[in-house]
Length: 455
Image (cartoon, rainbow, N blue to C red; front, top):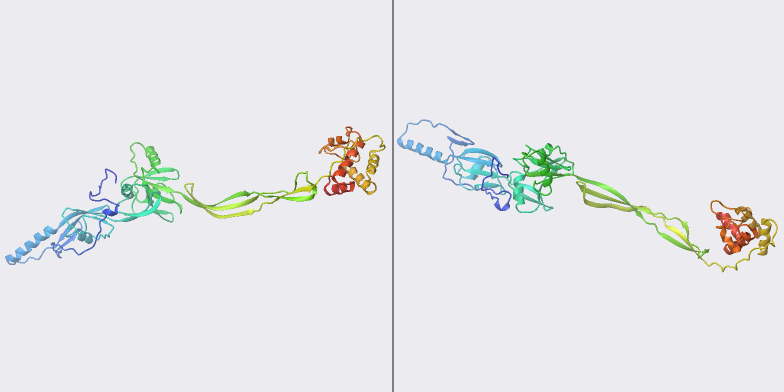
């Protein structure tokens, strides 16, 4: 309890420690004090007497009555009874503290604190103090535990519990949207409420529910509430700032009620699943050519779902609920040739002027020189009709292919002669050599062109 309290605790009480609790055992009390008679019945705060009927008796009878009056006067005591801070003055004829408590309907058990001890004689003018034990849920250095204390409020309980060292928090129980504690928060001072990145100072509220209401705090079903020392590093700066905002004369809270916002939700994330690449070998493709993509690859997707719990926005628990591939990756397929390319033929000699006529006529003569007549000539004629219309100056503006055979690039035809740009015979000579090397014959080239639209 803080200094300057209007009701300082009895000096013999040390609350909240098991080794200081008084074990109270109810036993029949023997006392020299006579039991009250119907003529003298004790009552809290007052004494009521019934007048005896007058009897003109012998001296012995008078002496007996006088002696009884003296005995009752000696047994009558006025004491102060403090039960959990509820203080009242009691007039009693009880011979012991236990008798006094029984007469006042105060029930104690082994964990409660009673001073003087229950079996002590009751003295006139005594201060009898009873502190009921309450079980508190605690967090000590992050670990959950519990303890029985006889403190009047959380402020007093923390004074005792923190004296033993460690970070101590008194955890409030939750019921729906309410929070509760077995003790008041602070019975004689303001309370700081730390919540939602702000700190309020609440006065004239003792119960934790009233304190939260005073700060206009509404609790979610999963939110956590605990009480800690206002000087605890967890809240020290926030409380000091809130007090400073109230001015120099503001009373500083000794305890703080801390509200932690707890949220649990499912969080879904996705990850790419890398596709694989598969290479097939083909004897129909030359080995010196780059691998050809016959099927494009595509990454898949993995979906992961977690249950995530956050306290004031910070993740404190993360549990994986599912992890599965929701989109399968597509394998990339390549074809790598294994066919050996034939030895190149000797470089063709530049075409001579022995060929005459149209470009088509020159082509027919030169094809015949290779033995490509009949159907082979027909295939060659159709192929170059399609490619260039047998035009020696034909140029493809998009690809850059040139000449009768549509060489790409046109400069390849320089191997047949330096006049490849203007001489149809040079272009035809190169084109026939290309067909022979790649497709074997004009019909082979024409078949490929019909299939894929190029040769």
